[in-house]
Image (cartoon, rainbow, N blue to C red; front, side, top):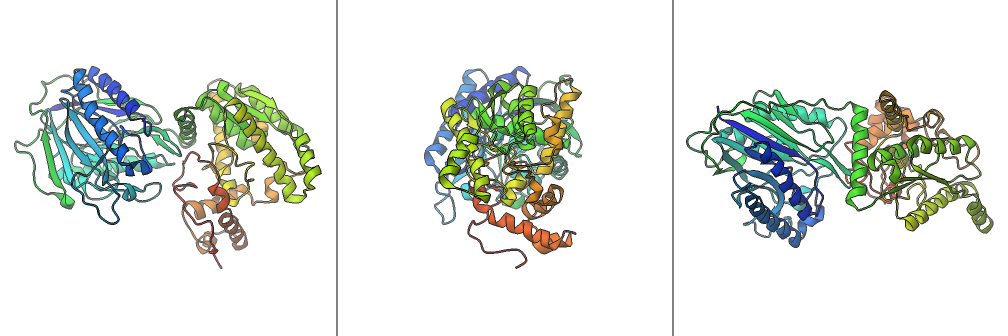
Length: 584
Protein backbone atom coordinates (compact mmCIF):
# COMPACT_ATOMS: atom_id res chain seq x y z
CA UNK A 1 0.00 0.00 0.00
CA UNK A 2 1.23 3.53 -0.71
CA UNK A 3 2.46 5.53 2.25
CA UNK A 4 1.53 9.11 3.00
CA UNK A 5 2.86 11.40 5.72
CA UNK A 6 0.05 13.74 6.70
CA UNK A 7 0.55 17.00 8.64
CA UNK A 8 -2.57 18.40 10.33
CA UNK A 9 -2.03 21.88 11.74
CA UNK A 10 -4.34 22.35 14.71
CA UNK A 11 -3.74 26.08 15.12
CA UNK A 12 -5.41 29.43 15.77
CA UNK A 13 -6.26 32.27 13.39
CA UNK A 14 -7.55 35.81 13.83
CA UNK A 15 -10.59 37.13 11.99
CA UNK A 16 -9.62 39.82 9.49
CA UNK A 17 -5.86 39.42 9.92
CA UNK A 18 -5.34 37.94 6.47
CA UNK A 19 -1.66 38.86 6.33
CA UNK A 20 -0.93 37.50 9.79
CA UNK A 21 -2.84 34.29 9.10
CA UNK A 22 -0.96 33.82 5.82
CA UNK A 23 2.35 34.22 7.67
CA UNK A 24 1.20 31.58 10.15
CA UNK A 25 0.33 29.18 7.33
CA UNK A 26 3.76 29.70 5.80
CA UNK A 27 5.53 29.19 9.14
CA UNK A 28 3.66 25.97 10.00
CA UNK A 29 4.11 24.64 6.46
CA UNK A 30 7.87 25.08 6.86
CA UNK A 31 7.64 23.06 10.05
CA UNK A 32 5.60 20.32 8.34
CA UNK A 33 8.06 20.18 5.46
CA UNK A 34 10.85 19.77 7.97
CA UNK A 35 9.00 16.72 9.29
CA UNK A 36 8.93 15.23 5.80
CA UNK A 37 5.19 15.69 5.21
CA UNK A 38 3.64 14.74 1.86
CA UNK A 39 0.35 16.61 2.44
CA UNK A 40 -0.30 19.57 4.76
CA UNK A 41 -3.68 20.85 5.95
CA UNK A 42 -4.99 23.87 7.87
CA UNK A 43 -8.41 24.51 9.48
CA UNK A 44 -11.59 25.89 7.96
CA UNK A 45 -11.28 29.53 6.80
CA UNK A 46 -7.77 29.67 8.23
CA UNK A 47 -6.77 32.50 5.92
CA UNK A 48 -9.53 34.88 7.05
CA UNK A 49 -10.31 33.57 10.53
CA UNK A 50 -13.67 32.14 11.53
CA UNK A 51 -16.47 33.13 11.78
CA UNK A 52 -16.26 36.25 9.60
CA UNK A 53 -19.98 37.02 9.97
CA UNK A 54 -21.09 39.97 7.79
CA UNK A 55 -17.55 40.48 6.49
CA UNK A 56 -18.53 37.69 4.10
CA UNK A 57 -20.99 40.10 2.47
CA UNK A 58 -18.31 42.72 1.84
CA UNK A 59 -16.86 42.22 -1.64
CA UNK A 60 -13.60 43.98 -0.71
CA UNK A 61 -12.97 41.39 2.01
CA UNK A 62 -13.81 38.48 -0.26
CA UNK A 63 -11.43 39.74 -2.93
CA UNK A 64 -8.69 40.36 -0.36
CA UNK A 65 -9.02 36.73 0.72
CA UNK A 66 -8.86 35.43 -2.84
CA UNK A 67 -5.86 37.60 -3.68
CA UNK A 68 -4.05 36.51 -0.51
CA UNK A 69 -4.65 32.87 -1.41
CA UNK A 70 -2.97 33.26 -4.81
CA UNK A 71 -0.13 35.22 -3.22
CA UNK A 72 0.34 32.52 -0.58
CA UNK A 73 0.69 29.86 -3.26
CA UNK A 74 3.50 31.87 -4.86
CA UNK A 75 5.19 32.50 -1.49
CA UNK A 76 5.20 28.78 -0.74
CA UNK A 77 6.79 28.04 -4.10
CA UNK A 78 9.35 30.81 -3.65
CA UNK A 79 10.46 29.18 -0.39
CA UNK A 80 10.95 25.84 -2.09
CA UNK A 81 7.69 24.39 -0.75
CA UNK A 82 5.83 24.32 -4.03
CA UNK A 83 5.90 20.53 -4.42
CA UNK A 84 4.20 20.08 -1.05
CA UNK A 85 0.38 20.24 -1.43
CA UNK A 86 -1.21 22.51 1.17
CA UNK A 87 -4.96 22.53 1.96
CA UNK A 88 -6.09 25.94 3.21
CA UNK A 89 -9.51 27.24 4.24
CA UNK A 90 -10.43 30.70 2.95
CA UNK A 91 -13.34 32.96 1.97
CA UNK A 92 -14.18 32.74 -1.71
CA UNK A 93 -17.13 33.24 -4.01
CA UNK A 94 -19.02 31.30 -6.62
CA UNK A 95 -17.80 32.03 -10.15
CA UNK A 96 -21.10 31.18 -11.80
CA UNK A 97 -23.88 31.96 -9.31
CA UNK A 98 -26.44 34.44 -10.59
CA UNK A 99 -28.07 37.05 -8.34
CA UNK A 100 -31.04 35.30 -6.76
CA UNK A 101 -33.60 36.45 -4.21
CA UNK A 102 -32.65 34.96 -0.84
CA UNK A 103 -29.02 34.35 -1.87
CA UNK A 104 -26.27 36.45 -0.28
CA UNK A 105 -25.08 39.24 -2.54
CA UNK A 106 -21.86 38.42 -4.36
CA UNK A 107 -22.37 34.66 -3.79
CA UNK A 108 -19.64 34.29 -1.12
CA UNK A 109 -18.58 30.77 -0.19
CA UNK A 110 -16.90 29.03 2.71
CA UNK A 111 -14.06 27.55 0.68
CA UNK A 112 -10.88 25.57 0.86
CA UNK A 113 -8.14 25.32 -1.72
CA UNK A 114 -5.19 23.10 -2.53
CA UNK A 115 -1.99 25.08 -3.18
CA UNK A 116 0.65 23.34 -5.30
CA UNK A 117 3.59 24.49 -7.44
CA UNK A 118 2.81 28.15 -6.96
CA UNK A 119 -0.79 27.83 -8.11
CA UNK A 120 -4.26 27.25 -6.72
CA UNK A 121 -4.62 23.70 -8.00
CA UNK A 122 -8.17 23.19 -6.77
CA UNK A 123 -10.91 25.20 -5.09
CA UNK A 124 -14.10 23.89 -3.51
CA UNK A 125 -16.88 25.19 -1.27
CA UNK A 126 -18.61 23.73 1.76
CA UNK A 127 -21.58 21.62 0.72
CA UNK A 128 -23.65 21.38 3.91
CA UNK A 129 -24.28 24.84 5.41
CA UNK A 130 -25.25 24.83 9.12
CA UNK A 131 -28.10 27.12 10.09
CA UNK A 132 -28.63 26.42 13.79
CA UNK A 133 -27.17 27.53 17.11
CA UNK A 134 -24.44 30.11 16.47
CA UNK A 135 -24.35 29.34 12.74
CA UNK A 136 -25.92 31.54 10.06
CA UNK A 137 -24.23 30.08 7.03
CA UNK A 138 -27.31 30.22 4.80
CA UNK A 139 -27.22 33.97 5.41
CA UNK A 140 -23.61 34.23 4.29
CA UNK A 141 -22.70 31.49 1.83
CA UNK A 142 -23.65 29.67 -1.33
CA UNK A 143 -23.19 25.92 -1.02
CA UNK A 144 -20.69 23.92 -3.03
CA UNK A 145 -21.81 21.18 -5.41
CA UNK A 146 -18.64 19.18 -6.07
CA UNK A 147 -16.85 16.17 -4.61
CA UNK A 148 -13.22 17.37 -4.59
CA UNK A 149 -10.55 14.67 -4.81
CA UNK A 150 -6.79 15.14 -5.16
CA UNK A 151 -4.33 12.43 -6.06
CA UNK A 152 -1.23 12.73 -3.88
CA UNK A 153 1.63 10.23 -4.13
CA UNK A 154 -0.68 7.68 -5.70
CA UNK A 155 -3.47 8.07 -3.12
CA UNK A 156 -6.85 9.66 -3.81
CA UNK A 157 -7.73 12.09 -1.01
CA UNK A 158 -11.34 13.30 -0.76
CA UNK A 159 -11.84 16.74 0.81
CA UNK A 160 -14.62 18.16 2.97
CA UNK A 161 -15.34 21.12 5.25
CA UNK A 162 -16.75 20.73 8.79
CA UNK A 163 -20.54 20.45 8.43
CA UNK A 164 -19.99 18.11 5.48
CA UNK A 165 -19.17 15.53 8.15
CA UNK A 166 -21.78 16.56 10.72
CA UNK A 167 -24.72 16.07 8.32
CA UNK A 168 -25.83 12.81 6.76
CA UNK A 169 -25.25 12.31 3.06
CA UNK A 170 -23.20 14.50 0.77
CA UNK A 171 -19.44 14.21 0.75
CA UNK A 172 -19.06 11.27 3.14
CA UNK A 173 -20.83 8.65 0.97
CA UNK A 174 -19.51 10.49 -2.09
CA UNK A 175 -15.95 9.85 -0.87
CA UNK A 176 -16.70 6.13 -0.89
CA UNK A 177 -18.24 6.34 -4.36
CA UNK A 178 -15.18 8.21 -5.60
CA UNK A 179 -12.90 5.46 -4.28
CA UNK A 180 -10.98 7.72 -1.90
CA UNK A 181 -8.23 6.24 0.23
CA UNK A 182 -8.39 9.15 2.68
CA UNK A 183 -11.14 11.61 3.63
CA UNK A 184 -9.72 14.87 4.97
CA UNK A 185 -12.10 17.34 6.61
CA UNK A 186 -10.96 20.82 7.71
CA UNK A 187 -13.02 22.29 10.55
CA UNK A 188 -13.70 25.24 12.82
CA UNK A 189 -16.15 23.55 15.16
CA UNK A 190 -16.95 25.65 18.27
CA UNK A 191 -16.51 24.15 21.71
CA UNK A 192 -19.43 23.00 23.83
CA UNK A 193 -19.45 20.92 26.99
CA UNK A 194 -19.35 17.19 26.22
CA UNK A 195 -18.89 17.82 22.50
CA UNK A 196 -15.61 15.91 22.50
CA UNK A 197 -17.50 12.66 23.05
CA UNK A 198 -19.98 13.50 20.29
CA UNK A 199 -17.15 14.48 17.94
CA UNK A 200 -15.27 11.24 18.51
CA UNK A 201 -18.28 9.07 17.72
CA UNK A 202 -19.06 11.23 14.69
CA UNK A 203 -15.60 10.76 13.15
CA UNK A 204 -15.65 7.03 13.84
CA UNK A 205 -19.06 6.71 12.20
CA UNK A 206 -18.13 8.80 9.17
CA UNK A 207 -14.91 6.83 8.64
CA UNK A 208 -16.93 3.62 8.44
CA UNK A 209 -19.45 5.24 6.09
CA UNK A 210 -16.74 6.65 3.84
CA UNK A 211 -14.94 3.32 3.87
CA UNK A 212 -11.55 4.96 4.29
CA UNK A 213 -9.21 6.53 6.82
CA UNK A 214 -10.77 9.83 7.93
CA UNK A 215 -8.91 12.84 9.30
CA UNK A 216 -10.86 15.51 11.18
CA UNK A 217 -8.63 18.58 11.54
CA UNK A 218 -9.98 21.06 14.09
CA UNK A 219 -9.19 24.68 14.87
CA UNK A 220 -7.94 25.79 18.28
CA UNK A 221 -8.22 29.23 19.94
CA UNK A 222 -11.16 31.60 20.27
CA UNK A 223 -13.07 34.35 18.51
CA UNK A 224 -15.32 36.69 20.52
CA UNK A 225 -17.73 34.34 22.37
CA UNK A 226 -16.68 31.16 20.58
CA UNK A 227 -13.90 28.84 21.71
CA UNK A 228 -12.27 26.18 19.53
CA UNK A 229 -10.78 23.33 21.50
CA UNK A 230 -8.90 21.45 18.78
CA UNK A 231 -9.27 17.72 19.49
CA UNK A 232 -8.16 16.72 15.98
CA UNK A 233 -9.00 13.05 15.34
CA UNK A 234 -7.86 10.49 12.76
CA UNK A 235 -9.73 7.18 12.46
CA UNK A 236 -9.17 4.10 10.35
CA UNK A 237 -11.75 2.85 7.85
CA UNK A 238 -13.01 0.54 10.61
CA UNK A 239 -13.56 3.46 12.97
CA UNK A 240 -10.57 2.82 15.20
CA UNK A 241 -8.78 5.90 16.55
CA UNK A 242 -5.29 6.25 15.08
CA UNK A 243 -4.42 9.67 16.48
CA UNK A 244 -6.01 12.32 18.66
CA UNK A 245 -4.58 15.73 19.50
CA UNK A 246 -4.87 17.42 22.92
CA UNK A 247 -7.49 20.09 23.53
CA UNK A 248 -6.72 23.84 23.67
CA UNK A 249 -3.19 23.32 22.34
CA UNK A 250 -1.65 24.44 19.05
CA UNK A 251 0.05 21.47 17.48
CA UNK A 252 1.12 19.99 14.17
CA UNK A 253 -0.15 16.41 14.15
CA UNK A 254 2.15 14.40 11.86
CA UNK A 255 1.07 10.90 10.97
CA UNK A 256 2.41 8.16 8.69
CA UNK A 257 -0.45 6.32 7.00
CA UNK A 258 -0.66 3.21 4.83
CA UNK A 259 -3.46 3.91 2.36
CA UNK A 260 -5.06 2.12 -0.60
CA UNK A 261 -3.60 2.87 -4.01
CA UNK A 262 -5.72 5.02 -6.27
CA UNK A 263 -7.56 3.36 -9.15
CA UNK A 264 -5.89 3.60 -12.55
CA UNK A 265 -8.72 5.76 -13.80
CA UNK A 266 -9.91 8.58 -11.51
CA UNK A 267 -13.58 8.66 -10.62
CA UNK A 268 -15.69 11.09 -12.60
CA UNK A 269 -19.27 12.17 -13.14
CA UNK A 270 -22.00 12.74 -10.58
CA UNK A 271 -22.04 10.71 -7.36
CA UNK A 272 -24.07 10.93 -4.13
CA UNK A 273 -26.41 13.90 -3.53
CA UNK A 274 -25.77 15.13 -7.06
CA UNK A 275 -22.15 16.02 -6.31
CA UNK A 276 -19.89 16.21 -9.34
CA UNK A 277 -16.45 14.64 -8.86
CA UNK A 278 -13.73 17.26 -9.18
CA UNK A 279 -10.49 15.27 -9.53
CA UNK A 280 -7.00 16.75 -9.77
CA UNK A 281 -3.85 14.67 -9.99
CA UNK A 282 -0.95 16.34 -8.17
CA UNK A 283 1.48 13.40 -8.01
CA UNK A 284 0.87 9.96 -9.45
CA UNK A 285 3.81 7.92 -8.19
CA UNK A 286 3.85 6.61 -4.62
CA UNK A 287 6.74 7.52 -2.35
CA UNK A 288 9.58 5.06 -1.93
CA UNK A 289 8.76 2.76 1.00
CA UNK A 290 10.13 4.05 4.30
CA UNK A 291 9.99 2.97 7.95
CA UNK A 292 7.10 4.81 9.65
CA UNK A 293 8.30 7.44 12.10
CA UNK A 294 5.00 9.04 13.18
CA UNK A 295 2.61 6.27 14.18
CA UNK A 296 0.10 8.42 16.04
CA UNK A 297 -0.37 9.60 19.60
CA UNK A 298 -3.76 9.48 21.28
CA UNK A 299 -4.23 12.26 23.81
CA UNK A 300 -6.68 11.62 26.63
CA UNK A 301 -9.53 14.16 26.60
CA UNK A 302 -9.72 16.44 29.62
CA UNK A 303 -12.13 15.58 32.41
CA UNK A 304 -15.24 17.75 32.47
CA UNK A 305 -14.25 20.51 34.92
CA UNK A 306 -10.73 20.82 33.50
CA UNK A 307 -12.21 21.09 30.01
CA UNK A 308 -14.68 23.83 30.94
CA UNK A 309 -12.03 25.76 32.84
CA UNK A 310 -9.65 25.44 29.89
CA UNK A 311 -12.32 26.83 27.58
CA UNK A 312 -12.91 29.82 29.88
CA UNK A 313 -9.20 30.60 30.05
CA UNK A 314 -8.79 30.23 26.29
CA UNK A 315 -11.78 32.46 25.55
CA UNK A 316 -10.63 35.29 27.82
CA UNK A 317 -7.00 35.13 26.70
CA UNK A 318 -7.96 35.34 23.03
CA UNK A 319 -10.36 38.24 23.60
CA UNK A 320 -7.73 40.25 25.46
CA UNK A 321 -4.81 39.51 23.16
CA UNK A 322 -6.59 39.66 19.80
CA UNK A 323 -8.17 43.00 20.66
CA UNK A 324 -4.84 44.51 21.61
CA UNK A 325 -5.42 44.87 25.35
CA UNK A 326 -2.71 44.30 27.92
CA UNK A 327 -4.48 44.10 31.28
CA UNK A 328 -7.83 43.46 32.92
CA UNK A 329 -9.68 45.03 35.85
CA UNK A 330 -12.04 43.22 38.21
CA UNK A 331 -14.19 44.38 41.07
CA UNK A 332 -13.38 42.01 43.93
CA UNK A 333 -16.25 41.57 46.37
CA UNK A 334 -14.86 38.59 48.24
CA UNK A 335 -17.61 36.47 46.68
CA UNK A 336 -17.32 33.35 44.57
CA UNK A 337 -18.06 34.88 41.15
CA UNK A 338 -15.41 37.59 41.20
CA UNK A 339 -12.97 35.14 42.79
CA UNK A 340 -13.40 32.62 39.96
CA UNK A 341 -13.16 35.36 37.33
CA UNK A 342 -9.93 36.57 38.94
CA UNK A 343 -8.46 33.06 38.92
CA UNK A 344 -9.39 32.61 35.25
CA UNK A 345 -7.90 36.01 34.43
CA UNK A 346 -4.62 35.23 36.19
CA UNK A 347 -4.34 31.96 34.27
CA UNK A 348 -5.27 33.67 31.00
CA UNK A 349 -3.09 36.79 31.01
CA UNK A 350 -0.83 36.45 34.06
CA UNK A 351 -1.37 37.86 37.55
CA UNK A 352 0.88 40.85 36.79
CA UNK A 353 -1.71 41.97 34.23
CA UNK A 354 -4.73 41.54 36.49
CA UNK A 355 -5.92 44.45 38.64
CA UNK A 356 -8.43 43.93 41.43
CA UNK A 357 -10.39 46.60 43.25
CA UNK A 358 -12.26 46.15 46.51
CA UNK A 359 -15.07 48.72 46.75
CA UNK A 360 -16.65 48.30 50.19
CA UNK A 361 -19.82 50.08 51.20
CA UNK A 362 -21.39 50.39 54.63
CA UNK A 363 -23.00 46.96 54.10
CA UNK A 364 -19.83 45.12 53.09
CA UNK A 365 -18.88 42.58 55.72
CA UNK A 366 -15.42 42.46 57.22
CA UNK A 367 -14.94 38.88 56.06
CA UNK A 368 -15.75 39.86 52.45
CA UNK A 369 -13.09 42.56 52.52
CA UNK A 370 -10.66 40.07 54.00
CA UNK A 371 -11.56 37.45 51.38
CA UNK A 372 -10.86 39.90 48.55
CA UNK A 373 -7.47 40.75 50.03
CA UNK A 374 -6.73 37.06 50.61
CA UNK A 375 -7.50 36.29 46.96
CA UNK A 376 -5.09 39.00 45.85
CA UNK A 377 -2.39 37.60 48.12
CA UNK A 378 -2.93 34.06 46.88
CA UNK A 379 -2.84 34.93 43.18
CA UNK A 380 -0.35 37.82 43.24
CA UNK A 381 -2.64 40.13 41.28
CA UNK A 382 -2.49 43.91 41.74
CA UNK A 383 -4.88 45.02 44.47
CA UNK A 384 -6.29 48.24 45.88
CA UNK A 385 -9.26 49.38 47.95
CA UNK A 386 -11.55 52.24 46.92
CA UNK A 387 -14.39 52.74 49.43
CA UNK A 388 -17.66 53.85 47.83
CA UNK A 389 -19.33 54.94 51.09
CA UNK A 390 -18.53 58.67 50.60
CA UNK A 391 -19.93 58.61 47.06
CA UNK A 392 -22.97 56.71 48.23
CA UNK A 393 -23.67 59.21 50.99
CA UNK A 394 -23.44 62.10 48.54
CA UNK A 395 -25.95 60.49 46.19
CA UNK A 396 -28.30 59.61 49.03
CA UNK A 397 -28.25 63.18 50.30
CA UNK A 398 -29.15 64.41 46.83
CA UNK A 399 -31.67 61.75 45.78
CA UNK A 400 -33.15 60.36 49.04
CA UNK A 401 -33.36 56.83 47.59
CA UNK A 402 -34.89 53.85 49.38
CA UNK A 403 -35.39 50.13 48.86
CA UNK A 404 -34.19 48.57 45.63
CA UNK A 405 -33.09 51.92 44.21
CA UNK A 406 -30.79 52.36 47.21
CA UNK A 407 -29.38 48.86 46.77
CA UNK A 408 -28.74 49.27 43.05
CA UNK A 409 -27.05 52.63 43.57
CA UNK A 410 -24.19 50.83 45.32
CA UNK A 411 -23.72 48.48 42.38
CA UNK A 412 -23.77 51.35 39.89
CA UNK A 413 -21.24 53.33 41.90
CA UNK A 414 -18.94 50.34 41.68
CA UNK A 415 -19.48 50.24 37.95
CA UNK A 416 -18.65 53.94 37.62
CA UNK A 417 -15.53 53.44 39.73
CA UNK A 418 -14.31 50.55 37.62
CA UNK A 419 -14.90 52.39 34.36
CA UNK A 420 -13.12 55.47 35.66
CA UNK A 421 -10.04 53.40 36.57
CA UNK A 422 -10.31 51.61 33.23
CA UNK A 423 -10.31 54.90 31.31
CA UNK A 424 -7.48 56.31 33.38
CA UNK A 425 -5.17 53.29 33.31
CA UNK A 426 -6.14 51.40 30.16
CA UNK A 427 -7.41 48.11 31.61
CA UNK A 428 -10.54 46.41 30.29
CA UNK A 429 -13.19 45.63 32.88
CA UNK A 430 -14.40 42.06 33.32
CA UNK A 431 -18.04 41.56 34.29
CA UNK A 432 -18.39 38.75 36.87
CA UNK A 433 -22.04 37.80 36.29
CA UNK A 434 -22.92 34.12 35.90
CA UNK A 435 -25.61 32.46 33.76
CA UNK A 436 -28.01 31.93 36.68
CA UNK A 437 -28.02 35.64 37.51
CA UNK A 438 -28.33 36.68 33.88
CA UNK A 439 -31.22 34.29 33.37
CA UNK A 440 -33.41 35.69 36.15
CA UNK A 441 -32.24 39.31 36.01
CA UNK A 442 -30.43 39.18 39.36
CA UNK A 443 -27.90 41.75 38.25
CA UNK A 444 -27.89 45.52 38.12
CA UNK A 445 -27.78 47.27 34.78
CA UNK A 446 -24.76 49.59 34.56
CA UNK A 447 -23.50 48.04 37.77
CA UNK A 448 -22.86 44.28 37.74
CA UNK A 449 -23.13 44.36 33.96
CA UNK A 450 -20.32 46.89 33.47
CA UNK A 451 -17.47 45.40 31.51
CA UNK A 452 -16.00 44.58 28.12
CA UNK A 453 -16.19 40.80 28.58
CA UNK A 454 -18.01 38.34 30.83
CA UNK A 455 -15.80 35.28 31.37
CA UNK A 456 -18.46 33.25 33.24
CA UNK A 457 -21.50 34.58 31.39
CA UNK A 458 -22.43 31.04 30.27
CA UNK A 459 -21.63 29.30 33.58
CA UNK A 460 -24.43 28.41 35.99
CA UNK A 461 -23.87 29.22 39.65
CA UNK A 462 -23.61 25.58 40.72
CA UNK A 463 -20.88 25.12 38.10
CA UNK A 464 -19.13 28.25 39.37
CA UNK A 465 -18.76 26.57 42.78
CA UNK A 466 -17.62 23.33 41.20
CA UNK A 467 -15.00 25.04 39.03
CA UNK A 468 -13.67 26.97 42.02
CA UNK A 469 -13.21 23.74 43.96
CA UNK A 470 -11.61 22.08 40.94
CA UNK A 471 -9.17 24.96 40.41
CA UNK A 472 -8.10 24.88 44.05
CA UNK A 473 -7.69 21.10 43.99
CA UNK A 474 -5.63 21.30 40.78
CA UNK A 475 -3.33 23.85 42.41
CA UNK A 476 -2.96 21.77 45.56
CA UNK A 477 -2.12 18.67 43.50
CA UNK A 478 0.79 20.59 41.97
CA UNK A 479 2.00 21.89 45.31
CA UNK A 480 0.80 25.42 44.48
CA UNK A 481 -1.28 27.82 46.54
CA UNK A 482 -5.01 27.39 45.81
CA UNK A 483 -6.06 30.75 44.30
CA UNK A 484 -9.57 31.02 45.74
CA UNK A 485 -10.12 31.53 49.50
CA UNK A 486 -12.08 28.69 51.04
CA UNK A 487 -14.40 31.20 52.69
CA UNK A 488 -15.43 32.56 49.27
CA UNK A 489 -16.57 29.05 48.37
CA UNK A 490 -18.23 28.02 51.62
CA UNK A 491 -20.12 31.16 52.67
CA UNK A 492 -23.71 31.77 51.47
CA UNK A 493 -23.71 33.91 48.28
CA UNK A 494 -24.73 37.53 48.88
CA UNK A 495 -24.77 40.80 46.97
CA UNK A 496 -24.29 42.60 50.32
CA UNK A 497 -26.44 45.58 49.33
CA UNK A 498 -28.43 45.58 52.57
CA UNK A 499 -27.86 44.22 56.09
CA UNK A 500 -27.83 40.42 56.31
CA UNK A 501 -28.71 39.93 52.64
CA UNK A 502 -28.21 36.53 50.98
CA UNK A 503 -29.15 35.45 47.45
CA UNK A 504 -31.82 33.03 48.67
CA UNK A 505 -33.81 36.03 49.97
CA UNK A 506 -34.69 36.71 46.32
CA UNK A 507 -33.95 33.47 44.48
CA UNK A 508 -34.64 29.75 44.87
CA UNK A 509 -31.80 27.52 45.97
CA UNK A 510 -29.26 27.46 43.14
CA UNK A 511 -29.33 23.67 42.86
CA UNK A 512 -33.03 23.83 41.95
CA UNK A 513 -32.83 27.10 40.03
CA UNK A 514 -30.08 25.87 37.74
CA UNK A 515 -31.83 22.60 36.94
CA UNK A 516 -34.99 24.45 35.95
CA UNK A 517 -33.03 27.01 33.94
CA UNK A 518 -31.16 24.30 32.08
CA UNK A 519 -34.47 22.79 30.98
CA UNK A 520 -35.95 26.14 30.00
CA UNK A 521 -32.97 27.99 28.56
CA UNK A 522 -30.69 25.26 27.23
CA UNK A 523 -33.30 22.70 26.18
CA UNK A 524 -36.25 24.98 25.28
CA UNK A 525 -38.66 23.01 27.48
CA UNK A 526 -42.02 24.67 28.26
CA UNK A 527 -43.61 25.08 31.66
CA UNK A 528 -45.70 21.93 31.54
CA UNK A 529 -42.74 19.76 30.56
CA UNK A 530 -40.65 21.19 33.39
CA UNK A 531 -43.43 20.64 35.94
CA UNK A 532 -43.83 17.10 34.63
CA UNK A 533 -40.12 16.58 35.34
CA UNK A 534 -40.94 16.92 39.04
CA UNK A 535 -40.61 20.63 39.85
CA UNK A 536 -43.07 22.69 41.90
CA UNK A 537 -45.54 24.45 39.53
CA UNK A 538 -45.49 27.78 41.38
CA UNK A 539 -41.71 27.78 41.54
CA UNK A 540 -41.44 26.98 37.83
CA UNK A 541 -43.87 29.76 36.93
CA UNK A 542 -41.88 32.23 39.00
CA UNK A 543 -38.51 31.25 37.50
CA UNK A 544 -39.82 31.35 33.93
CA UNK A 545 -41.40 34.77 34.46
CA UNK A 546 -38.16 36.15 35.90
CA UNK A 547 -36.28 34.78 32.91
CA UNK A 548 -38.68 36.15 30.31
CA UNK A 549 -38.81 39.65 31.77
CA UNK A 550 -35.00 39.95 32.03
CA UNK A 551 -34.36 39.78 28.28
CA UNK A 552 -33.76 43.54 28.05
CA UNK A 553 -30.99 43.24 30.63
CA UNK A 554 -29.26 40.38 28.83
CA UNK A 555 -29.20 42.33 25.58
CA UNK A 556 -27.06 44.94 27.30
CA UNK A 557 -24.60 42.51 28.87
CA UNK A 558 -21.13 42.21 27.35
CA UNK A 559 -20.05 39.17 25.32
CA UNK A 560 -18.63 36.20 27.16
CA UNK A 561 -17.23 32.73 26.58
CA UNK A 562 -19.77 30.18 25.35
CA UNK A 563 -19.49 26.72 26.89
CA UNK A 564 -23.06 25.38 26.67
CA UNK A 565 -25.21 24.22 23.79
CA UNK A 566 -27.29 27.39 24.17
CA UNK A 567 -25.66 30.47 25.63
CA UNK A 568 -27.23 33.89 25.92
CA UNK A 569 -26.38 35.80 22.76
CA UNK A 570 -26.09 34.24 19.31
CA UNK A 571 -27.60 30.95 20.44
CA UNK A 572 -30.75 32.21 22.14
CA UNK A 573 -32.56 35.00 20.30
CA UNK A 574 -35.82 36.11 21.83
CA UNK A 575 -37.77 39.34 21.46
CA UNK A 576 -37.43 41.92 24.21
CA UNK A 577 -41.03 43.07 23.82
CA UNK A 578 -42.88 39.81 24.36
CA UNK A 579 -46.20 39.11 26.08
CA UNK A 580 -46.01 35.32 25.77
CA UNK A 581 -45.80 33.68 29.17
CA UNK A 582 -45.51 29.93 29.67
CA UNK A 583 -48.58 28.45 31.32
CA UNK A 584 -50.88 31.44 30.72
